[in-house]
Length: 106
Image 1 (cartoon, one colour):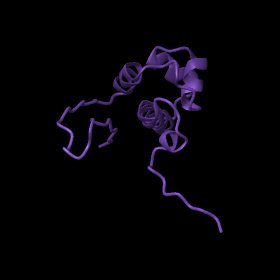
Image 2 (image 1 turned 135 degrees about the vertical axis):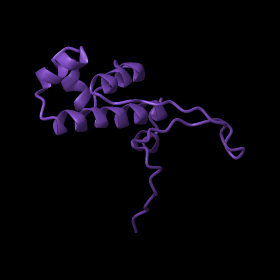
Image 3 (image 1 turned 90 degrees about the horizontal axis):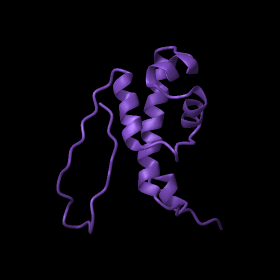
């Protein structure tokens, strides 16, 4: 019999990786950046020029290698791609000992 474990929806947490929540947030932001680049039919070189990053760094980001890229830089990239970014801070439910970070796209 095979044991099946339900996912938390965060693969980094499921794999018990350090900084799992931050990595999941970055993964969501990187995915959105990639979606916008594809939707606009930009080459990586064109996108890198718009974003102000070297093309190899953008290539890595789009392949999930974003450890050296801050969330702030990713938000700046979204702004440069014509997206508004809102950060909302609210009180966590009493049932949680600490707050969580979520990325929601409108």
